[in-house]
Image (cartoon, rainbow, N blue to C red; front, side, top):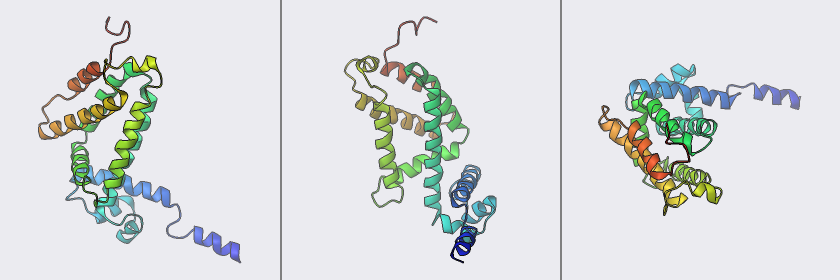
Length: 208
């Protein structure tokens, strides 16, 4: 009897919760990109995900929490792509250029990320811990890309990996903010120039 009840419970309305949460996040991402954060409703997101409004609230308590999850998932996907595509410093500039072009295809998500990051600067904001940990993790991951003296030698003289990581994120975030304000602005060229300023070219890299 005990085993039967256990199996019945597993087949209940919230079985497969991770998969259901993933469906909701995908639906929210589409809704935010199409309607904007202010106009997107939890009911619309629930309908896109094929669940009830009450069912959505079982997984996410409000739209702010859902937006944080959408952006966190985007971060995770891009980090995995970066690991796969960037095998060394020479691949960094092309990868970043492609990443910015990808972000420009969904300007509403870029705008929402900027707005949420600013709001999360308040300690009481629901996304505050996420953003603090995100930047700590990103800086550490960037610095870990310099495991030895040879790698450190690729940085311009006098620049530490720790300071390079801070500058790196400041430039990326600042360029995207400027583009949201003026979408005719070229930000791909400047990010490539920044990488050239930050790193010394390897032998033969500038021969073409």
